Amino acid sequence: MNDVKQISSFLQKVPLFRGLDTRHREHLARRFVQRQFEAGQTMVTQGQGGEGFFLIVSGKAEAVRERGDGTQAVVNTFGPMDFFGELALLDDGLRTASVVATEATQCLVLTRWDFLALLREDAEMAVAVLQELARRFRRVLDAL
Image 1 (cartoon, helix red, strand yellow):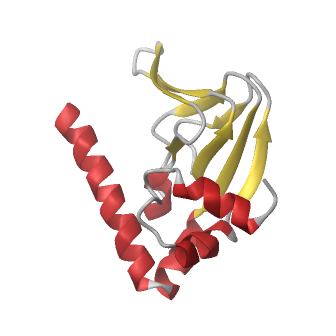
Image 2 (image 1 turned 180 degrees about the horizontal axis):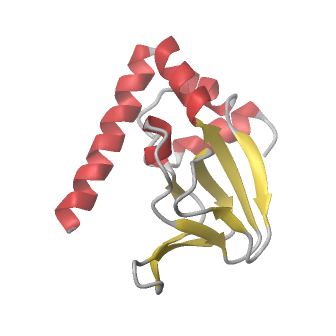
């Protein structure tokens, strides 16, 4: 997925970006970088700073949280069009879980700095993305 139009088309299928128009998606697509992970490779590590937002193009991964007693629990699984790291887009806090590729995985990654630059450049896009993030957080909280 090397072309801005291909990435934009993929973004249209992702709920977080579905509300954006073509111009906004293409602008966003230019900021993503591609990353590859092998099965068993750690993508992000709990307790460390976040690189940004990860959008899975192909492959699978799972989020693993280490508990205070040292045991680990799988708290989420991810496949194509799933994403994680949305909190890292908004603040520079530590990762709340580790994410490990369970098979060869290709991702699109957006850094916090690029995301914030986009929000500053285009208030309309900022509102659309932030509203969807708020809806997502609300659904998670309602499920607890």
